[in-house]
Image (cartoon, rainbow, N blue to C red):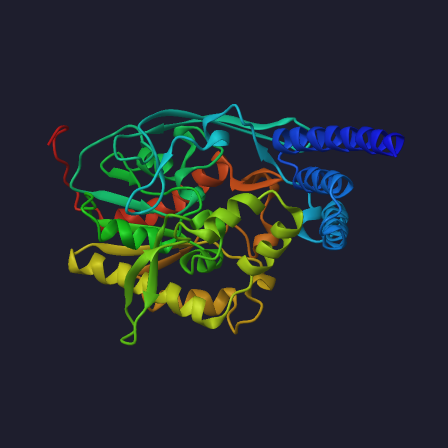
Length: 392
């Protein structure tokens, strides 16, 4: 009997050691399958040592191993099978520690922050820096003070993800309109709901033009479906057709704790991808109501509201009666002008030179420069033709 116990003890030590190895690797590499294996190992070691509840434990271990097997197979199927770029953890954006909560969504602190993106093989896709002002928004240089001001709202395409300060869309517009003052209110992962929150806040949004760079893929963001919208303002559609502030996306609680625990799971990512891209007509109605209120706020301040539209893939409208054309038609009934900035008949036909990388669809400096030239021709129509001295 003592020999059997000694043998069981050695087996337990080996299993626990394996569990510690899996745990260490899982934490280091953010590998969810390894974390599941470590949990299975510790549970198996417990079953060997204690007989009580062994039948339930065996079933639990088998279930964990089944999920682990599915987790290992998942990368070969669906969206999780596609190669994706990753942020270098040594860069500020890779750490994401510089983000802080605000009333309009999470924003970075003042300063110059690095961002470096790598391919799955580890080759560099880009390495750039973001210059952030006191208000948490990216600085557009040269900074001028003019009574012809243009406020830019939007997402990563507006802030200029993967590009240096002098390669963003607001920068090129500013450089081509020397008599204008340009403010970049865009940020990664944002949408129309963030723009409305900014306009409703205490922030200085005076100006001649409020410009929103948007796309049909902003619709699920306004509905708080993507997990990265956590902390952004959440709007709800009221019975009168207007939207009202109803808290924040992904409010802190059990759901957000589970999200943090599962965010490295391939199976969970596949499920989240399906949920985030599962749109319905009510999501579109909420989005259009938000955009409509942006237009109302702008006109109440005698500002022009102009939309820059980026087309989406036609298959991204599944489950709704919308298309790129009908989406544009709805926006044209709201904004003063809607400008197609796709730079191609369809997004699938967009020249590769206008994308940072095959694994990163964000626009290049060349794309922003070309889009800026289109916008300048529109913005010039609203220029008052006067300029205030710098500092006023």
